[in-house]
Length: 273
Image (tube, rainbow, N blue to C red):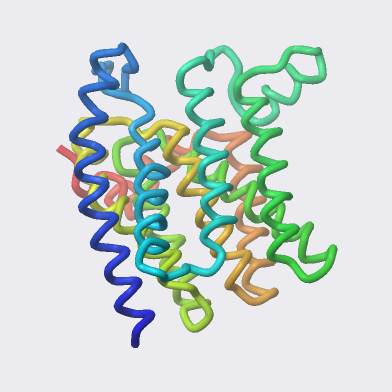
């Protein structure tokens, strides 16, 4: 029961801290020109998702100050910070003349490193680093590396319309929780969900864009939770799903697919203006 209290406290603390950070961060991003046109051609702050890493750092610091240790939080925090930094680089310096994993790979083969290519290479190394510490053998290291890396990019693929990436995060998190709820360290997991719950209205109402600095964090977190807490077979099924999704999005538009499928369109539109 004590762990439940710590986890609930972490969720509430993250909710409050995220609100304070966003209150200060969004005007800063706007005033410094960190804005981008959204799908409606409106200029809104970008990279607001760097708030997730900031919030987690403060919550885990609070845990430590009151002598509570969320097991795995140091490793998790390292991965979150690193992937958010790579996403921030892509948000701020990235050009949109090269898109898709295939496009960035082709550019790299030709000797040109894009920010997307840097993010892919760096993200793969981060995934491998995390997998080394949470896996028992090389089969699981490979499985978990692919799971974390593809999960990271999957949420990034969704982040093309307000709220879509967060809805995808919640849906995939629900599946992971349903499978692994008995083994999960809730004090590690719930703070990020608390931050995302506070941030959701800003994303839905198109007041801010989380950018890769945020979507990468959500994707890596899902992959890490799955790799750390789920049994072998569910992890394998999740990896198969992610491979199929990536294959599909290299060939077809995910947004057009969502628009064509009634139930997906309804979920996608839920909560928007």
